[in-house]
Length: 86
Image 1 (tube, helix red, strand yellow):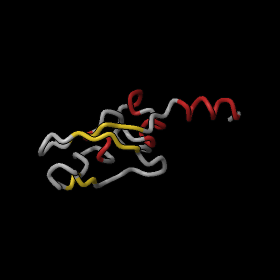
Image 2 (image 1 turned 120 degrees about the horizontal axis):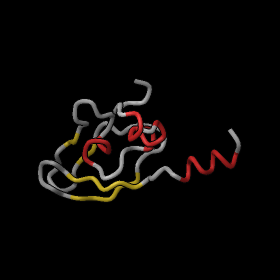
Image 3 (image 1 turned 180 degrees about the vertical axis):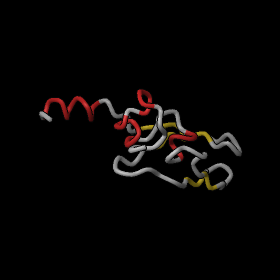
Image 4 (image 1 turned 45 degrees about the horizontal axis):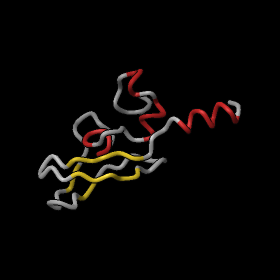
């Protein structure tokens, strides 16, 4: 893969997502990790510990406005599976 293609690929990855707590509705913009899926998130509004919904790899895929970077890289929108490699 050329460096130009790599730059285009990484430029398309969004790193911010807005999480909405399903318990209290608290909304917060967060920067997502780029190298892993985040399985737990502590809501600042009600202190609930958010966990991914069945079939999702992380809290961003379940409760965020943007799926996590690993899923974006896998092309979830194109392929359909919720986890890379399936």
